Image 1 (tube, rainbow, N blue to C red):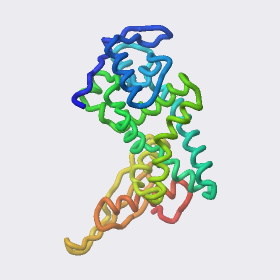
Image 2 (cartoon, helix red, strand yellow):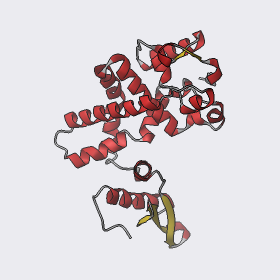
Image 3 (spheres, rainbow, N blue to C red):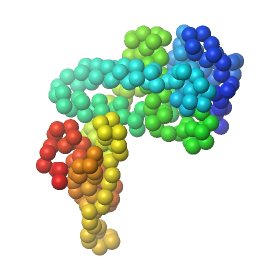
Length: 260
Protein backbone atom coordinates (compact mmCIF):
# COMPACT_ATOMS: atom_id res chain seq x y z
CA UNK A 1 0.00 0.00 0.00
CA UNK A 2 2.94 2.32 0.49
CA UNK A 3 3.36 4.84 3.27
CA UNK A 4 0.00 6.17 4.55
CA UNK A 5 -0.56 9.88 4.41
CA UNK A 6 -0.19 11.54 7.80
CA UNK A 7 -2.82 14.11 8.75
CA UNK A 8 -1.18 16.37 11.32
CA UNK A 9 -3.19 18.08 14.02
CA UNK A 10 -2.46 21.57 12.72
CA UNK A 11 -4.16 20.70 9.41
CA UNK A 12 -7.52 20.36 11.17
CA UNK A 13 -9.99 23.13 11.79
CA UNK A 14 -12.93 23.16 14.19
CA UNK A 15 -16.21 22.30 12.49
CA UNK A 16 -19.79 21.82 13.65
CA UNK A 17 -20.65 20.16 16.99
CA UNK A 18 -17.10 20.73 18.15
CA UNK A 19 -15.74 18.18 15.69
CA UNK A 20 -12.87 19.11 13.37
CA UNK A 21 -13.92 19.96 9.83
CA UNK A 22 -12.35 17.94 7.05
CA UNK A 23 -10.47 18.98 3.95
CA UNK A 24 -10.97 17.22 0.62
CA UNK A 25 -7.99 14.89 1.04
CA UNK A 26 -9.20 13.70 4.43
CA UNK A 27 -12.74 13.16 3.13
CA UNK A 28 -11.34 11.15 0.24
CA UNK A 29 -9.30 8.99 2.62
CA UNK A 30 -12.31 8.35 4.86
CA UNK A 31 -14.56 7.48 1.92
CA UNK A 32 -11.96 4.99 0.69
CA UNK A 33 -11.77 3.49 4.17
CA UNK A 34 -15.56 3.16 4.26
CA UNK A 35 -15.61 1.47 0.88
CA UNK A 36 -12.97 -1.07 1.86
CA UNK A 37 -14.60 -1.71 5.25
CA UNK A 38 -18.13 -2.01 3.87
CA UNK A 39 -19.41 0.92 5.93
CA UNK A 40 -21.49 4.00 5.19
CA UNK A 41 -21.42 6.80 7.74
CA UNK A 42 -23.90 9.64 7.64
CA UNK A 43 -21.31 11.83 9.39
CA UNK A 44 -17.74 11.68 8.13
CA UNK A 45 -16.82 14.01 10.99
CA UNK A 46 -17.95 11.37 13.49
CA UNK A 47 -16.01 8.67 11.64
CA UNK A 48 -12.97 10.95 11.67
CA UNK A 49 -13.31 11.46 15.43
CA UNK A 50 -13.02 7.70 15.94
CA UNK A 51 -9.47 7.88 14.61
CA UNK A 52 -8.30 10.89 16.66
CA UNK A 53 -5.80 9.62 19.20
CA UNK A 54 -5.42 11.61 22.41
CA UNK A 55 -1.95 12.69 21.27
CA UNK A 56 -3.69 14.88 18.69
CA UNK A 57 -5.80 16.66 21.29
CA UNK A 58 -2.78 16.99 23.57
CA UNK A 59 -0.78 18.75 20.86
CA UNK A 60 -3.54 20.72 19.16
CA UNK A 61 -5.61 21.86 22.12
CA UNK A 62 -8.81 20.19 20.84
CA UNK A 63 -11.01 19.02 23.68
CA UNK A 64 -12.05 15.86 21.85
CA UNK A 65 -10.32 12.60 21.00
CA UNK A 66 -11.54 9.06 20.46
CA UNK A 67 -11.48 7.95 24.12
CA UNK A 68 -15.18 8.55 24.80
CA UNK A 69 -16.08 6.73 21.59
CA UNK A 70 -13.75 3.92 22.65
CA UNK A 71 -15.60 3.67 25.99
CA UNK A 72 -18.92 3.39 24.17
CA UNK A 73 -17.59 1.00 21.54
CA UNK A 74 -16.15 -1.29 24.20
CA UNK A 75 -19.64 -1.68 25.68
CA UNK A 76 -21.23 -2.31 22.27
CA UNK A 77 -18.51 -4.80 21.36
CA UNK A 78 -19.02 -6.65 24.64
CA UNK A 79 -22.78 -6.80 24.15
CA UNK A 80 -22.45 -8.13 20.61
CA UNK A 81 -19.84 -10.73 21.57
CA UNK A 82 -21.96 -11.89 24.51
CA UNK A 83 -25.06 -12.11 22.30
CA UNK A 84 -23.24 -14.20 19.68
CA UNK A 85 -21.83 -16.54 22.30
CA UNK A 86 -25.20 -16.94 24.04
CA UNK A 87 -26.95 -17.62 20.74
CA UNK A 88 -24.43 -19.92 19.11
CA UNK A 89 -23.06 -21.85 22.09
CA UNK A 90 -26.28 -22.70 23.88
CA UNK A 91 -24.82 -25.74 25.65
CA UNK A 92 -21.80 -23.95 27.14
CA UNK A 93 -21.92 -22.81 30.79
CA UNK A 94 -21.37 -19.19 31.76
CA UNK A 95 -17.76 -19.76 32.77
CA UNK A 96 -16.73 -21.07 29.36
CA UNK A 97 -18.62 -18.30 27.58
CA UNK A 98 -16.76 -15.74 29.68
CA UNK A 99 -13.42 -17.35 28.82
CA UNK A 100 -14.09 -17.25 25.09
CA UNK A 101 -15.38 -13.67 25.27
CA UNK A 102 -12.26 -12.47 27.09
CA UNK A 103 -10.12 -13.77 24.24
CA UNK A 104 -12.19 -12.58 21.27
CA UNK A 105 -12.28 -9.01 22.61
CA UNK A 106 -8.59 -9.04 23.59
CA UNK A 107 -6.08 -6.50 22.38
CA UNK A 108 -4.31 -9.04 20.18
CA UNK A 109 -7.44 -9.98 18.25
CA UNK A 110 -8.85 -6.44 18.04
CA UNK A 111 -5.57 -5.02 16.77
CA UNK A 112 -5.46 -7.77 14.15
CA UNK A 113 -8.95 -6.85 12.96
CA UNK A 114 -7.91 -3.18 12.92
CA UNK A 115 -5.02 -4.04 10.59
CA UNK A 116 -7.35 -6.00 8.30
CA UNK A 117 -9.57 -2.91 8.13
CA UNK A 118 -6.45 -0.76 7.49
CA UNK A 119 -7.27 1.53 10.39
CA UNK A 120 -3.55 2.25 10.66
CA UNK A 121 -3.76 4.21 7.39
CA UNK A 122 -6.39 6.65 8.70
CA UNK A 123 -5.26 7.17 12.29
CA UNK A 124 -4.73 10.76 13.40
CA UNK A 125 -1.69 10.88 15.66
CA UNK A 126 0.31 13.61 17.29
CA UNK A 127 3.84 14.13 16.04
CA UNK A 128 5.42 12.49 19.07
CA UNK A 129 3.25 9.37 18.83
CA UNK A 130 3.88 9.19 15.09
CA UNK A 131 7.63 9.26 15.61
CA UNK A 132 7.49 6.45 18.18
CA UNK A 133 5.60 4.06 15.90
CA UNK A 134 2.12 4.65 17.28
CA UNK A 135 0.54 3.65 13.98
CA UNK A 136 1.62 0.05 14.61
CA UNK A 137 0.98 -0.20 18.39
CA UNK A 138 -1.53 -2.88 19.29
CA UNK A 139 -3.16 -0.82 22.02
CA UNK A 140 -3.75 2.19 19.80
CA UNK A 141 -5.14 0.03 16.99
CA UNK A 142 -7.45 -1.93 19.30
CA UNK A 143 -8.70 1.29 20.93
CA UNK A 144 -9.36 2.85 17.52
CA UNK A 145 -11.40 -0.18 16.47
CA UNK A 146 -13.53 0.15 19.60
CA UNK A 147 -13.93 3.86 18.91
CA UNK A 148 -15.03 3.04 15.36
CA UNK A 149 -17.67 0.68 16.77
CA UNK A 150 -18.86 3.40 19.13
CA UNK A 151 -19.05 5.93 16.32
CA UNK A 152 -20.96 3.50 14.11
CA UNK A 153 -23.45 2.87 16.92
CA UNK A 154 -24.06 6.61 17.29
CA UNK A 155 -24.23 7.19 13.56
CA UNK A 156 -26.34 4.24 12.43
CA UNK A 157 -27.78 2.45 15.46
CA UNK A 158 -27.29 -0.86 17.21
CA UNK A 159 -28.44 -3.15 14.39
CA UNK A 160 -25.84 -1.81 11.96
CA UNK A 161 -23.16 -1.93 14.65
CA UNK A 162 -24.19 -5.50 15.53
CA UNK A 163 -23.89 -6.56 11.89
CA UNK A 164 -20.45 -4.98 11.52
CA UNK A 165 -19.05 -6.44 14.73
CA UNK A 166 -20.52 -9.88 13.98
CA UNK A 167 -18.77 -9.96 10.61
CA UNK A 168 -15.39 -9.88 12.30
CA UNK A 169 -16.01 -11.41 15.72
CA UNK A 170 -17.93 -14.55 14.67
CA UNK A 171 -14.90 -16.07 12.86
CA UNK A 172 -12.73 -15.28 15.88
CA UNK A 173 -15.11 -17.15 18.17
CA UNK A 174 -14.63 -20.24 16.01
CA UNK A 175 -10.85 -19.86 16.03
CA UNK A 176 -10.73 -19.41 19.80
CA UNK A 177 -12.83 -22.54 20.31
CA UNK A 178 -10.48 -24.48 18.04
CA UNK A 179 -7.50 -23.26 20.11
CA UNK A 180 -9.20 -24.44 23.32
CA UNK A 181 -10.03 -20.95 24.60
CA UNK A 182 -6.74 -19.73 26.08
CA UNK A 183 -3.75 -20.70 24.05
CA UNK A 184 -2.14 -17.35 24.82
CA UNK A 185 -2.53 -16.95 28.57
CA UNK A 186 0.27 -14.38 28.70
CA UNK A 187 -1.72 -11.89 26.64
CA UNK A 188 -4.97 -12.42 28.54
CA UNK A 189 -3.17 -12.23 31.89
CA UNK A 190 -1.49 -8.98 30.87
CA UNK A 191 -4.81 -7.43 29.89
CA UNK A 192 -6.43 -8.63 33.12
CA UNK A 193 -3.55 -7.28 35.21
CA UNK A 194 -3.64 -3.91 33.47
CA UNK A 195 -7.40 -3.68 33.92
CA UNK A 196 -7.39 -4.67 37.60
CA UNK A 197 -4.09 -3.26 38.83
CA UNK A 198 -2.81 -0.97 36.04
CA UNK A 199 0.43 -2.96 36.01
CA UNK A 200 2.03 -5.59 33.82
CA UNK A 201 2.94 -9.09 35.08
CA UNK A 202 6.63 -9.73 35.74
CA UNK A 203 8.19 -13.11 34.91
CA UNK A 204 11.23 -14.67 36.61
CA UNK A 205 13.05 -17.90 35.91
CA UNK A 206 13.17 -20.00 39.08
CA UNK A 207 15.46 -22.71 37.73
CA UNK A 208 16.41 -24.76 34.72
CA UNK A 209 17.72 -28.29 34.48
CA UNK A 210 18.84 -30.95 32.06
CA UNK A 211 21.28 -30.99 29.14
CA UNK A 212 21.08 -28.32 26.46
CA UNK A 213 19.17 -30.57 24.05
CA UNK A 214 16.62 -31.54 26.72
CA UNK A 215 16.23 -28.54 29.02
CA UNK A 216 13.38 -27.89 31.41
CA UNK A 217 12.53 -24.39 32.64
CA UNK A 218 10.54 -23.23 35.66
CA UNK A 219 9.10 -19.71 35.51
CA UNK A 220 7.01 -17.78 38.00
CA UNK A 221 4.97 -14.62 37.49
CA UNK A 222 4.28 -11.74 39.85
CA UNK A 223 0.99 -9.87 39.57
CA UNK A 224 0.21 -7.05 41.97
CA UNK A 225 2.98 -8.20 44.36
CA UNK A 226 1.67 -11.78 44.46
CA UNK A 227 3.66 -14.66 42.99
CA UNK A 228 2.09 -17.46 40.96
CA UNK A 229 3.64 -20.66 39.67
CA UNK A 230 6.11 -21.91 38.89
CA UNK A 231 5.10 -23.16 35.48
CA UNK A 232 7.28 -25.73 33.74
CA UNK A 233 8.10 -26.03 30.04
CA UNK A 234 10.68 -27.11 27.47
CA UNK A 235 11.54 -23.47 26.87
CA UNK A 236 11.06 -20.17 28.67
CA UNK A 237 8.02 -19.19 26.61
CA UNK A 238 6.08 -22.36 27.34
CA UNK A 239 7.00 -22.16 31.03
CA UNK A 240 5.81 -18.54 31.11
CA UNK A 241 2.55 -19.62 29.51
CA UNK A 242 2.04 -22.22 32.23
CA UNK A 243 2.77 -19.68 34.97
CA UNK A 244 0.42 -17.17 33.30
CA UNK A 245 -2.28 -19.85 33.12
CA UNK A 246 -1.95 -20.49 36.87
CA UNK A 247 -2.15 -16.78 37.64
CA UNK A 248 -5.08 -16.17 35.29
CA UNK A 249 -7.09 -19.00 36.83
CA UNK A 250 -6.28 -17.88 40.37
CA UNK A 251 -7.28 -14.29 39.65
CA UNK A 252 -10.53 -15.49 38.10
CA UNK A 253 -11.35 -17.68 41.08
CA UNK A 254 -10.85 -20.97 39.27
CA UNK A 255 -7.93 -22.12 41.40
CA UNK A 256 -6.19 -21.11 44.59
CA UNK A 257 -3.57 -23.83 44.99
CA UNK A 258 -1.13 -22.52 42.38
CA UNK A 259 -0.23 -19.40 44.31
CA UNK A 260 2.99 -19.52 46.28
